[in-house]
Amino acid sequence: MKISAKLKIGITLFLLIAFLVFLNLTIIPNKIKNFFYLISSPIQKSLWGAGDKVSDFFELISEIKKLKKENEELKLKIQELLAKNAKMFELEKENKILREALEIGLEKEFGLILAEVIGKDISQDSILINKGKKDGLNNNLPVITQQKILVGRVGEIYENFSRIILASNKESAFNAQISRDEEGFADEISGVVKGRGNFQLFLDLVPKEKEIKEGDRVITTSLGGIFPKGLLVGQIQKVKKSDIEPFQQAEIKPSFDIKELETVFIIK
Amino acid sequence: MKKILILIILFYILTLFQASFLIHFPIFGKAPNLILIAVFALNFLENPRKNTGIYIAGISGFFWDIFSKGFIGFHILVLVAIALCIKIILRNYLTPLIRYRF
Image (cartoon, rainbow over the protein chains, first blue to last red):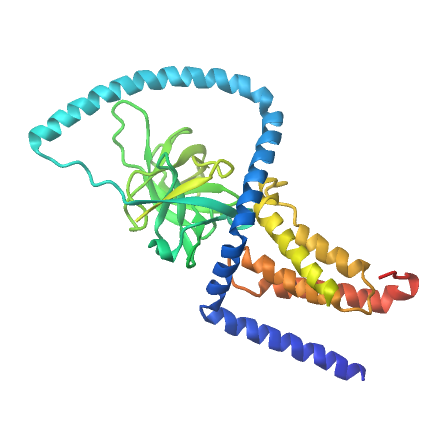
């Protein structure tokens, strides 16, 4: 009697595993997920909004001390940027005049699709957005923020929703180069940005003879074909050099803040 | 049957709460996992002779799979395995020591 009960459990488990393997080989899981996202999205939206507000409130309490210092630093930064902006404005004007003179058309803007973040998966560095196949999305389309900061790429696509693989996901790797606010900086330093999980990024395969500094900006290159050129990835946080390794590595502080991420743009 | 239906609805809401609310409060980079705690608690507190906890483990695993990246089935198997282990331990080693009310 005991053996038959164990056998029953064994057969049930085997059938369950076989059924799940078979199910995942078809497109049914995507349909099931899409259905559940569709019926859950109103509740998810309100829960997401509530969670956002509560976490903001707690964060504000814990960070209130830092805010004053940060505020002063930001004021200084604003002054600095305003000065830079004025200079840029002059350059833009000059650029426009030159373009007109040379009859060059403006660079074609990206075709952008606005999407709302309705869920995120911290353990797997991915987010869920409310746009899918129905809105013309495809796999591997780049996802950016309003400030043109790289967020990631479309990973899984459903009828009305998509899952975005963040740049910090362990599966993510792409080419990038260093950009620096320095007069006369024209050195082309490129490497590969790899995700480390947990919203951490690092720059790898940078030749040792090239000098990278903390605070350098990391931007995408068009190499690899997924991301367009010039999207901000983050800033260099810590450079790691070793005598044995032929390349140097650097930790990158991502420019997008996952907590603040509410809307994203998908580049078509 | 009524109890199972109520538990399914409860675990569905719990999964939504987990995926959309608790995700904002990570502790050391991980959000607290209420589904796992609830499945563990249900199987631990339920009468070891009953199987409701195992069914609910499978269903909550399914909900967990829906709201996370990857294939459907992984969390179902993990939670069912956890529930089975708890039941086996309780049935074989702890039942004579504890009296269950439900």
